[in-house]
Amino acid sequence: MERRSDGVVVRATGSWYEVLHDGQTLRCRIRGRLRLKGVRSTNPVVVGDRVTCERDEAGDCLITDIAPRSNYVIRRASNLSKESHIIAANIDRAVLLVTLRSPETPTEFVDRFLVTCEAYKVPVTILLSKIDLQEAEAVARFRTIYEAAGYEVVEVAAKAGVGLERVRELLAGRTTLLAGNSGVGKSTLVHAIDPSLDIRTGEISESHHKGRHTTTFSTMYPLSGGGAVIDTPGIKGFGLIDIDDDELWHYFPEMMRAAPGCRFYNCTHTHEPGCAVIEAVRSGEIAWERYESYLKIRDEDEKYRK
Image 1 (cartoon, rainbow, N blue to C red):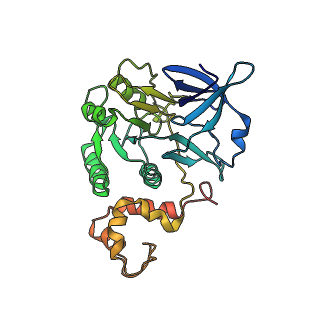
Image 2 (cartoon, helix red, strand yellow):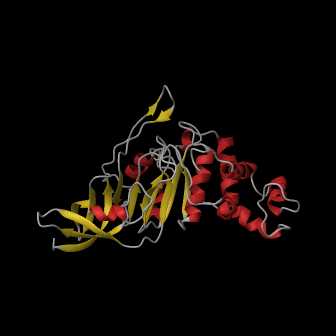
């Protein structure tokens, strides 16, 4: 490569970064001063970042600059109450894989992820994974809740080929983040979409009925049909960051639709008389499960917010 070049980060380990430049993958480190720019993230460079690289006198490749991000998906860093962890940047769509059993994805996790995508302008689609293992009644209720909120819900069984055509349409020509708890089938889905990709898969732990981590580092994979997917390590928790209580309801689309009918302009949608959101919950227009998540997130404990 020339001494200075631009590229996209396709793999991030925390110590080394793989940058795609003109079809060539460069193994790079971060120039130290990049860590001193006031970034409150545990990972200043992430998969999807557009970066500038330079060769130093020893011939090593260094990331020296990061282009402004169009968007990103971020969460509170584990055990670090004031720091964040950016999962990926510059993505066209997020796809959240959810399972209602084997293993169970907590509703609050789903809603926290959706709130973050809304806040950071990332379109999101929900995939109900391992649909052949789910109970029909639970699937129907889940679809009712999230389709009423405004999200597309796609039923998928990767090994059986169910829903794969719609997933291919979502991925075609786009950079897509695949996210979800461990064990929901992200790697299996990617392999079903594009068998040429060598992504490891894992099994469910019978003793704890939870997924084992299979992806160690976030990695962007090019798809043979165009576009790319970012496969991420399974996420256990999803703490919100930089979202105030007063603006939280802005990121529940169904609440945004109802809120103009509230009596008070600064309604918190928790107790006020004449609250159109509360009335919509009572009438079933807004699902109780979503409203309950809203209340829980507002009242979240100290491990997520100080």
